[in-house]
Structures are given as C-alpha cells and as structure tokens.
Image 1 (spheres, protein in one colour):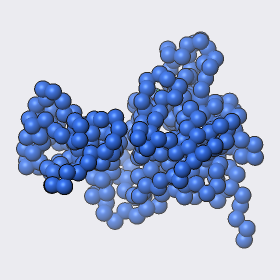
Image 2: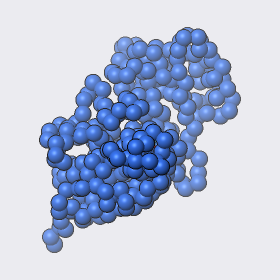
Image 3: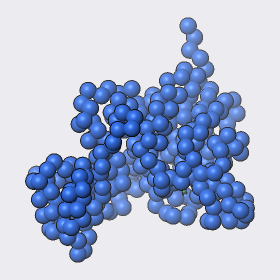
Image 4: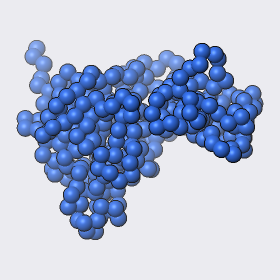
Length: 323
Ligand code: SIN
C-alpha cells in the first residue's frame, strides 16, 4: 500500500501574545494575551504553498499561567496528531514567557518521529507591526519539512533546540537565543536556509504522566545568593515539597548556609535535589569528586525544575514506555 502524502501541518493553539489583542493597533504593550482563536492566527499567516493546515484550540492562556493539566492535554494531542500518516508536523502557538519550559517538557515526554515546532510573538495579533504571522508561517514551513523529528522553537527567523532555547529579552522581537550552542538553523524568505542536525531527547512517553486529576510532584526553585539562609528550604520541606532545584552560583556552588539546610532536609525525609547554574551560559562541570547534590548539567533552573518533575514521575511509574 502506498503511504499517504504528508502534506498536513496541525497548529495547536495555547494562547500567548501571538493571540493577544489590544484596543489600538499601535499598542504593543497594553494587550490581553490569549484572546484571538488559533483559526484566525492560521488565516493571518502566509504559510508555504502545498501545505494543508488544520488547527485545534488546546487552551487560551497567558503562558505565565501554564499548568500541568494543559501540558498533559497538549502532549496527548501532539502524540495523537503525530501518529496520523498524512501529518508532516505539528506547530504549537504559545506565550513566550514559559515557552522554553513547554518545549523541554514535550521533548522529554513525546517521542514524535516528526517535527514539533513551538512559536509565539512579542507583539499582539492586533498590532500594526505584529510579528506573529511571520513566525507562524516560518513555523509551518519548518514543521512541513520531511526527514526531521524532535521539538524545536522557531522564532524571529531562527530555529532553536528545546534543550538550548531560552527567553533572553522581555521586549525585543528576537527574544530567544540558544546560548553557547547557537541556533540550529535560520530561515530566509520562509525557507530553511541552514540547519544543523536536530538533537533528539530521550522521551519518557505519555505513560509517565500521572492519571488525570492525580497530583504532580511538587518541585520548587531556591536560589543560592549573598545572605541566603536555610529558612525557605526548611519551610518548603515542612510543607511537603518533593523536589528542590538549587539555582546555584557559578559552577554549581551553593552558599554554606543553604547547603547545610539542604543536607538537613535530605536527612529528615527524601527530597530530590538538583543543582543548576544561575549563569546564563554553560554547564555545571563535574570536579571529579562526589558532590552532595546532583548536577542538572547545562539545563537552566526552570528547565531543571521540569526535568526533576519528570524524573520524580518516572520514579513513580518505572514501567512507563515511550509512545
Ligand atoms: C505569554 O507568555 O503568554 C505572554 C507573553 C508573550 O507571549 O510574549
């Protein structure tokens, strides 16, 4: 039997500035995120010829309010559409504020053999100079590429990996960067002009997610900084926290008072602890001697938090299989 032509891209809408609206087309700041439907976003984007575009509204959120229930639904719908033979790839429109967390979550949960492309915008859909339509058209072009697989972010003419991407500016149009690694590729005139191979993360599969309505692990970030003490850690442990990410200084170093509080916490009851660096670029390099707390490598603290949530879920469901 002939395999069907993969010429469909599915756009899943979750909200964000890309779907935001303001009272005036000149207002790029005083808008409400997550108000314009994904159908309208698709209609405004001039995607590549020969690609059929479908859309589905998953949520309509300002991404600062992203939640686990939406992540779960998004992962399920990505897996569902990725399994359809006629689908070339999936695009997700998302607010920029937590886009990197969702990208890492999907990369570590969904084992899609097709492109999964997140995009957003820095100006609302109603802006005279909206950047959303261009970003969405580029994302659709990248998602329709045969032979690519994995979760990437397309923004301001660049392609970033889920692992390296981070929001680096609160208002510039090119608000995303990939640190030392640099972007995976660039788009010129709606076409992928250069591209490195896309990394594939080891995906845990949807089976790792808790049953609907069940609690997800509670993981918080604590910062090591001048003058910190252990009170925040003690309060969190008393309140039942499951995991802590330490946003550590430099090469993963932790203030002695915070380190003492973390050690006390770990002696009282099992609390998973990961050290990530506060530095903008680079990884926590192992010094060749055992460290009290495991390193998150080069994951930024917010992605290390997602990682720790997933590792705790994996520990709860050891038999989970990749989908
Ligand atoms: C959001 O993250 O939903 C609002 C900000 C943005 O999309 O740029």
